[in-house]
Length: 407
Ligand SMILES: Nc1ncnc2c1ncn2[C@@H]1O[C@H](COP(=O)(O)OP(=O)(O)OP(=O)(O)O)[C@@H](O)[C@H]1O
Ligand SMILES: [Mg+2]
Image (cartoon, rainbow, N blue to C red; front, side, top):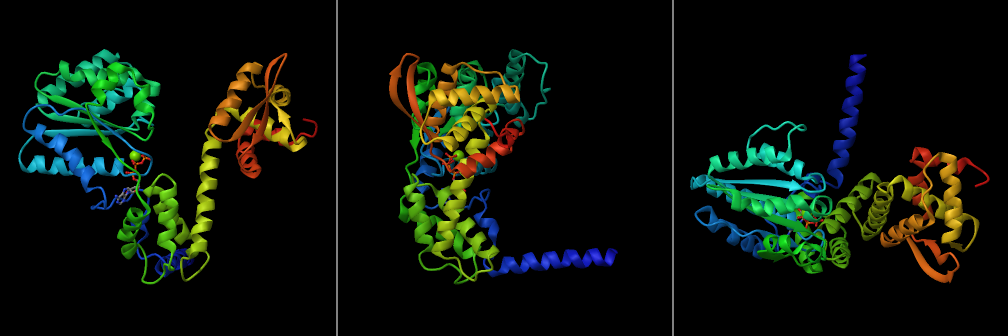
């Protein structure tokens, strides 16, 4: 029996290792987590950031820094790299330097921010039970004892501001509370309108210095891709035009390096899975479809249940008639809620949810008349029906609606 298992496992390894050698020489360098040591076309941003922070390792406190630019332009990669390198050179020179990196998608309350800061400088705090002011005090005292410069990176800072603007306020004020240490903040966002939405008191202190990451051009994306292809692939497996196409599509998508890299990786994976010898432009086109499909599904899956019920009403309505209005949607929505025991929201609230779906680009809602009951809108789904159904079927409360005849 044991012998048999072993053979199976060997077979599996042989199969995948063989597959690995056909197209990929090292797929790791194309994985979303891999960051190369050298980031082409970002030397200037690297220097800009280092120039602001480095001098304050010796004296003075560095300004808070606000970094913005569209998605996939290297903000996170450059910032992390500058900080790791500064840490190394600070060690060599025996200067005290610490930093914390947090992604505010996950660290999104003042409590979490402070707990993470405490952990990063080595003090234990219980997850719950302590009053915020107590943790704040603990952190402040511990940091002061370290006599250090501390940089706090708040990546995707817009998320934190949305959920807890107070955290940002507290952090931007902490410096004036500290006696022998210095704290400065690097806030990163890809929301170009974020700065305008900031409370003026926070805005001025958060953006003492600003660094803008502009979108990559197609030529720059080409260099970013070629830097990895020699290591990632065997010789001659990339068809002529593959790199150009991945770069061109990335450049169209706001100069997004992540998109270009994803396209190349997925295209190569498709070729490999298909047993093809080469990656061609056709694989890239297919990869584009796969990636776009995944983003739609991700967005739909993360909608709250009430919004999903509204989406389902639109989906069902569209299946019945060519033109549906807010009134039709509300009628179906109320039925669904009764059947699955969801609270029935008011027509006005459902109208708001439809507007949210419109803003997310999932439906279009066009005003057609201003009747007795307010504005009526014509609603249209703009994403593929198949994907909507796929997501709704996974929602256990809503899936049974699809089995009912008379809705
Ligand atoms: N100049 C570059 N050279 C090589 N790889 C790069 C470069 N810029 C970005 N990348 C790669 O592209 C991907 C996206 O970069 P990064 O995560 O830094 O983008 P970002 O600006 O933080 O995007 P977002 O706003 O979505 O967080 C990463 O895998 C990163 O390694
Ligand atoms: Mg980022």
